[in-house]
Each structure stands twice: as structure tokens, then as C-alpha cells.
Image (tube, rainbow, N blue to C red; front, side, top):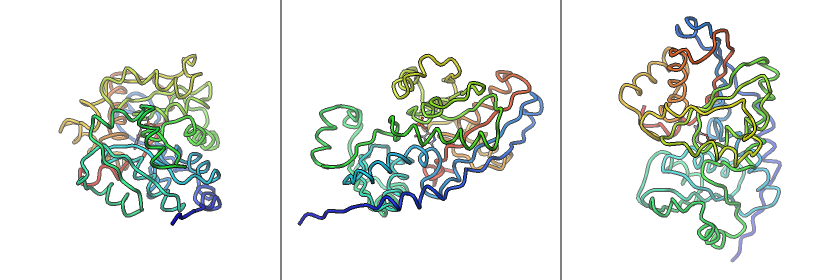
Length: 311
Ligand SMILES: Cc1ncc(COP(=O)(O)O)c(C=O)c1O
């Protein structure tokens, strides 16, 4: 029996169009006063209880397109704690859209992220590290497309050109709420969020991405692949030295510093993305790498779900 299932684009409108801008919060810290800096945080982690942070923005038009083209579903890739797969599973459940997660891990892997994803109906396929490295390989993608006909295949982290328009909307919110910003700062992994922000960067605001991965020399090229005009744009840079030892790694000292920072600032932080990048930002402020008098904004990209059990 073939089940033909047609998702309803009006669900997408209900999900996305009633959404107010994410809150802005002014941060207070002795280092900011000492260096005469003003820092706000854009609480994208509060955009949605399940599809939070940059996932909310990156998935927005990918989901709309899949629904309007009546795709059979969306297939994507991620690690066993992937915020992206978690958000995709939640969105699929909410929008009645099938989802498949190709997960780097053992079939018996279980953690709160995967439990949620299964509960929301995501089909999980587990692959080992070696196979996962082939996630951009045309042959494997063709095989997945054969096995999941009619599915939209979205790269790891949801970082693809279709993700960019949803991210640019963050600037529209800022234009109304916080004009004349000198610098916007964010954590970076696969580069899609940064590429989206560069695609609508106001000339007066510099963008600085804090890489959370070690050895991310390739990242600049990847951002330019996602948004080619970034190669000619001199208004952005990547900070590559605050990776804390590598992706999802942090020393006990850094973890404690992030937990303390969360308390001091009154903002929940996890150590993989926003906590790591915010700690890097404060260390750079302390080292005098931000011009006195600057108005700065840090984007909290969410991801608290991935840190369950580790905080
Ligand atoms: C919570 C969180 N913040 C930031 C990022 C980094 O975003 P990007 O991969 O678009 O660079 C990710 C990964 O996608 C993430 O899960």
C-alpha cells in the first residue's frame, strides 16, 4: 500500500508568522565597564521551545519549500546530540512532514536528543564515523535519494543556500530594536548562520564569528561557498583560537568559567556553542581586542537541548 501524504503549508504559517522577534537583553559585567563597551545578547534561544536558536531561522524556508513542493520529507545529517536533527524532528512533527536523521553513532545510541527525535517520528539511520565522513559524497547522496524518494536532502547543520534568507531576518529585527551596532558576534560551526548574516550585513556593522571547532582554517572558504560575495567583504572575520580543544571539548576550567558566566549574566549557556563563544569574546575584551566605546551584540544561537545531562 502506498500512502500519499500531503502536508499543509498553512501549518508553516501558523508556526512562523505569529513569532515575535527574539528578546534583546543588555548584559552587565565588570569587564564591559572597564573597557567602556556596551553588550547586548539576542536571545534566539527563546525563539521556540523546541526549534530554537539558529535552527529556527535556518530551517524556516527549507521547511516552507519542502511543504510547498509537497516533498515526501526531509533527510539530514548530524551527530548523536545534534541540535539540528533535534529541531528538524520537532519541526517535522509539528508540520506533519516526515524526517530522516542520518546519525554519526552506534545503532544502540540513546540519549535525550535521540529519544526526542524518535518520539517525534524521525527515522534514524546510524552510520560509523568513516561512512559519516562521506556525507557530501555524490554517490552516497544519490543512494540516499533512491532509498528516500521525494525527500529533500539537507546538509549537516542545515547549512545550505536555502538557509540564508531565514537568518537575514535577524537584521530586520535589529534595525527596529537596536540600530547603530558596531559589531555582531556569534558562534560558528558549519558556517551557515554566519553566511546568512553576511548576506544582509549593514555596512556600519562588522561581524565576528567565533569558531567552536579546532583547525577551522577551511571555514572561511565554506562561508564564501555558501555566500560567494563574502569573499569580497572585508567587514567580517573569524576568531579561530577559542575552540577550547575542539568541537564539544572544553577544559574543566573553561566549563566552570562558562557556568559562572551564565550565573553572572543571568543567561543560560551551554559549553559547546554560545557559552564557548561568549567566553572567547570576554577573553578578547580583556585582551583589549574590542575598541572602547563600541556597541556589541552577541547572538545566543540556542542549543541548550544538546547539553542536557552535561550541565
Ligand atoms: C546551538 C548552535 N549554535 C551555533 C551553531 C553553529 O551554526 P552554524 O553551523 O550555522 O555555523 C550550531 C550548529 O549548527 C548550533 O547547534
